[in-house]
Length: 165
Length: 251
Image (cartoon, rainbow over all chains, first blue to last red; front, side):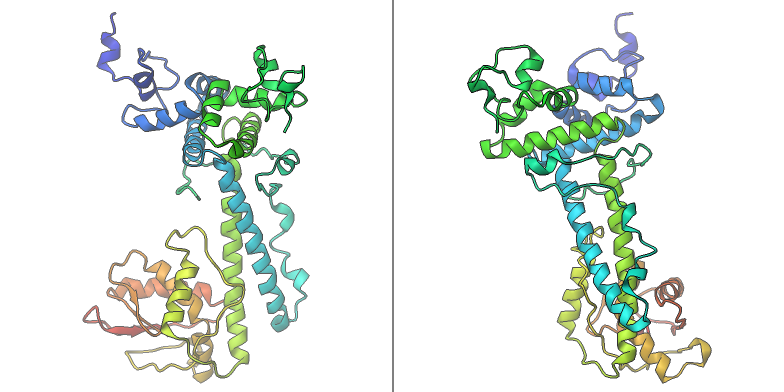
């Protein structure tokens, strides 16, 4: 059994990059197909193969594809923006959210003139308390030290389209 | 920035890695010994050598922010091994999208109320209308809208000279004016509806839209009109358009 079996099925992108034999129970094979070499290359460059392997081992099998896709997304973000990576996108979205909330409050205040509904009541169907607790990231250490990150394991990000940056 | 290598105490990275903390340790300024968990997280997710390579590629003044963002991502990944901080991005994108919809609806209401109050509004310059429209569409990305804080007025007067126009409820001049008043928002809805139609273009007047396929397109527009009119129902039918260049008045 000299590798004939691994030659009959093509090595995954990870084993090709790492120049090793792709075994039948390779942890990377289901998620890093040989026709997507750059996906593993990015993940390997940012996280390292052994770290990715450890992360995947700790994740249940049914969640591994999502985990790989989110790692690939983070890796791409970090390669595009080596200083802030994904955090830049979070900061941008937080700012956009603040702007929209501000604009919405103004629009509703104006609407209240016409509808005679007090502005406060206009906010009822969009409760600001439902927003996640993501403090503004402005790159300063003091802001980051006060951050709390909310866990939300049920969000499906597999089908997110464009990268927001 | 702690300079722990200058004292006897090694930085958190060198403590963790059990090595001597040299005077030019690249980690020392950013991983003080009193924050051991920070480096532990970063090391677990990214690895010391990857972090070293990354920091070496950056300018010194960028490194602190880079380390802090790596620490944040590492902590996020530790708390949520499946999605990490990408989950946060997804949640925020949904929130932004929801807020944008709410704002668009509020602006549409405002236009409607404002135009009902103002009998005559000066017509908008076509270039202004196009620029305002471009800014609302957000450079074609579609995800983030540049929405003004207050809607701009639109010309209320228009003539319906093409084809058949049927208005539910008997119609009349008043309903025509109220329909025209929120056309600014409807134009956007229509553009979204026609985004796949290759011959679509907005002409000089905000009230006229050239469309090539009238049949199913008009039905789709009806849906958008009803959805965005906030209870004011108006139905417009189009006469068949023999050539793509012929204008069809939407309202």
